[in-house]
Image 1 (cartoon, rainbow, N blue to C red):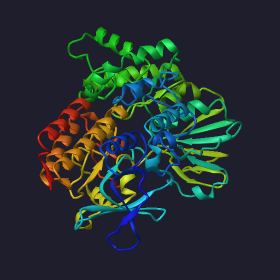
Image 2 (image 1 turned 45 degrees about the vertical axis):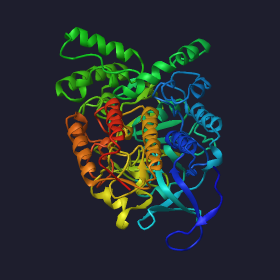
Image 3 (image 1 turned 180 degrees about the vertical axis):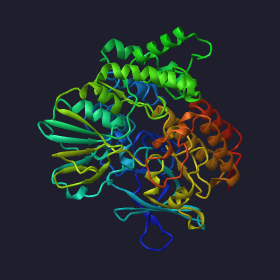
Image 4 (image 1 turned 135 degrees about the horizontal axis):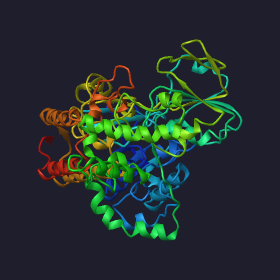
Length: 547
């Protein structure tokens, strides 16, 4: 429903407000599906997005080489067979332009655009306890009065872009990968610096190495990488994966990570030769299968972790050959899989090109950006025409803490999460009635999941919860403090049993100075999480205060 009437007075009595039943922040994978479901309930609902179009991360992340590392046929909505089969992918791991076209196909097929406001940023959301409603404001001055507030902002949508002194003084071009311009950026023949070699930096480096005049890569934390095998899809391949729709719908929501494959091997039950055979087989698959479906023990047992890690190191060293590059680019001080594992195509080989230089900045950090380029602590100036910041995000929390969200008693979510990052199942937060969340901490969608699998589950749970409230003429729901405490304890017990909890990375917020340390993602498995969420709903939402 397209609501243009402004018939509600906000709490401060200023301008008239647009009145909604539900407001959704974000028009990406979660936001589009949430809008579709709530609109089908008959709610007056609208989505807002800072981007100029639908797509979420696939609208913003337009950098060279951006693409899936989930197989395309599982990174899809499974609620509609017609919608699923109405789109055909051109390859196993498509690039950003094709993914963005798919997101537009979804929005147009479901006629969602009429209820989305683009190029509009939500700046504040305050809960009015007297009226049990949220007053929301935008950067354009609009005031919205809504019963339910649902955040579908994405877990990697708050980029870390202002990191080095002097960035504003740079006389060339400087871009963060997550805010890549829509217009073409000319890199041919230029001196380009890439800061960061996480998943995004790797995609950029392997894509532009053969185009630029000179490429300098500033390397701090080396990454384990796996080679991507990305076959093209013709009519036969497309027909084959579409024929699996019912199978995928029945299995994806219940695997450990929401992918089609799952852990099937026991390390202890296999001989060393059999273990090696499994590792070789999953490595040759050319996907994330080695990480997500080889041996679950690699996440818990340090000896297993070391053996699997050394297997990947061997593969990387054989490709790099150069001992100096191996020292810079092959991890040795943390285990495989405890960081995000990127897929790549000839990424390591890019460093063997004569125009590419890897610059270690762990012990010689970047001091500042100058008008001419990047200066490291030893005083070396690296002259550049273009700087590409692949420097990551304030994951899980940053998208919401950059909005002034205030709950009961005026409590601030930014301040609360600045002390301790807590949620109830990643779906609600004690002290913030009628605020529903997706892709925030303490759920698998914060990191360890094929995102569409997890985001569909969360948006469906939220939709069912709102339908339950409305069926009983209830208006407010909020987790109790006791319920949230129980979930946090369970989350931490589960996470702290893994090696992930012992490894500094953005998975723990370690990339943000002062951020409370906690494993952001629920590590108990996607299927287990879904069952726990279903149990809460089946109990009539025990642990939640409803009125």
